[in-house]
Length: 354
Ligand code: KG4
Ligand code: ZN
Image 1: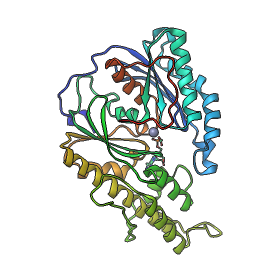
Image 2 (image 1 turned 30 degrees about the horizontal axis):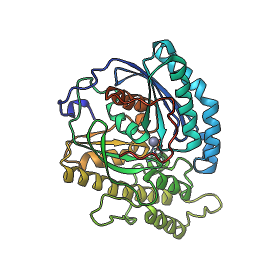
Image 3 (image 1 turned 90 degrees about the vertical axis):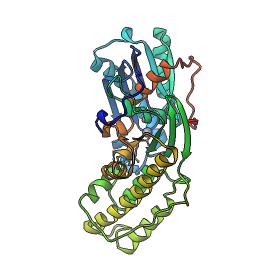
Image 4 (image 1 turned 180 degrees about the vertical axis):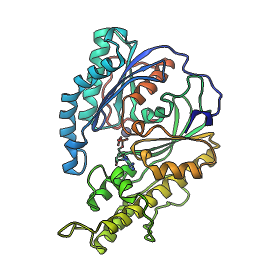
């Protein structure tokens, strides 16, 4: 969404600083250098997808080992790409939760090492706050979307609807009672034989497919909570009935896989887009911000834009999935509010947002 659709209101990002940001909460080792709150000088992401693909999901022990191998070259890569050295930095920002503890500690300790060695302020960032601030990446420096905002974070670990009243002011309105949307996509990808991660694979398989097949939606009354486990089971049963799962010799019929992928994607998107638009109406929000890996989904982006009564702010797909640029932007805003953490900062795997 072009920033011209934003409400030109509050003027922020008047802060001038160079922030090194680190993200390692799950299966991406990432580092970025952010200037003046919003400008991305570098944005390096080392994905572990190839390592975890054969297991159909993230294996925590492998993830931490991979972070250890990648953190130093990724950090150096971010500094080199930005054409800066540690001497140029003003602060260090790092994701300290929620996430996999063995993964988080690698990033947190790398950030602490840089902050200690250079005497720099250190700020810990909540991973979901990072996804939220992906919407501010490269936005015009004097433009803010106007509050309150509804933030929808749909990722491998979260499906959260958040009311954001201002910078750093959050209320969680609803989250998933069982599987996260991305987790459901990944499990569906496995059932359909499409590999890991399931989200992009299902989107590709469903492209241009129209099907009369309808899978169930869990509306949960008028609550803003989500549930995807029933849909996942319904997909499994349909896949068994139609000879897709377990995969027959020679593989499942691609046209049936495509129809199931399309029906699954439509069901997930229908529930998320409907509830996000409802949250906007209920809270008189002035914008809807999408974040998290699932918000890279083209149908979700399209349906949220179609159903929301207010402008929808969607980061570029590469900033929807895990990256450090979003942590650098969120960290810059936190620093601007005077927030810093000392060297006692530690990984908090189940860190709460609000
Ligand atoms: O935010 P993210 O990179 O990592 C977490 O914090 O979890 O999200 C990863 C999730 C995976 O479950 C992946 O299947 C999903 O995002 N995903 C998608 C798409 N791209 C990534 N889901 C649906 N459609 C996509 N295009
Ligand atoms: Zn994430």
